[in-house]
Image (tube, rainbow, N blue to C red; front, top):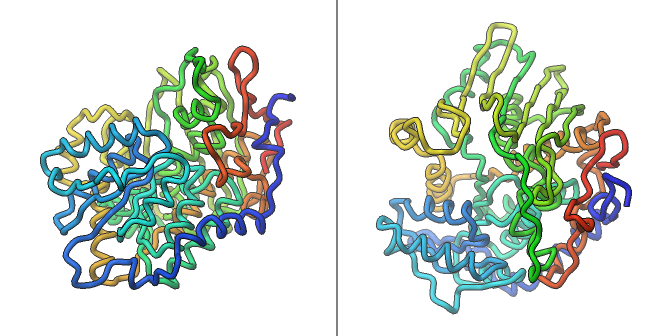
Length: 453
């Protein structure tokens, strides 16, 4: 197999087939349930939530939701792997502030690729979607079809077909008056809300240039190869962050935060096109999957404004996270640090992160509170549109760095290239979308050779 070509880059799935299969997968979930029956009903005492995807982020999202002062309970959970579900349930049950809000009987604990359908079939009002990003469009479509309010983690898609399904689902959510929040928590963070008001009020003038950085430690050599006794597919899902078809690459999975800020500055009008460069210099060894360890992308917006986006996962060197805008009247740094609260570019929790969140507000909890408030008061809330556009903008950047070509928004969003064709029919016995060679190395993109859309 030629380097840079694999099942994720040669498999063709039409938009009609993708949407048709997704609709078929969700049709049985509705089963005559009206939205009024399955969504939150004003006057009900307690919001009932289900969690799909019980890894670290899913567990954190559930904890943040349950910290709400509104009456709320976690009543159903699902994951592909039983050990992750059990670990998550145990961890949540041991948090003193929320112990009384965790009530997940054994009959509402579901394991396997069909677990999301079973959670949706439970008597829940809200579903938290936190599986690897490849599954997000399918699970989101199923949740809205089942009449549930949704919190979904970022990123929301990893390819063009996924983006189009998201946008179709957003329209259905609006039609059914369902509330949607995406885990781009800076949209719910007071410091960013205030900073964006200043930008949109014209304080910096017309935007000329946006500079964002998501340069993090990590990504060094890893020779932890797949052991005997575990399937290729299970191995990849358990290490999903290192595989493009599952995560979208770290420019999509992590740097989407900064890319979302740039789009927000531009009033959510996506870029016209992108060019860029990237590669793997230190991410070597069979434990490092497919993804690059550095990207640099130039996004060009309809106004002519540029967004220069850096994204790096390399040990040593300059670690930095910030969002900066240059206009005809001046320059503004809207936020810095991985949490947008200043500090160094790491996730150690040091430098008084807890104290800063206490002072500035915890955006991870605020996004859930905003969702709960919208459900209870009936106000419009649908983060799904900017979640989809920012996720796809990050995908556009990856397409540019993987291919080495200039890629237009139209080419990216209309691409029929699905990174994981047949995903909705997966079992643990299914073949993985990519496979390794004899020494455990996976095919990686080669700029100038790889067809990325």
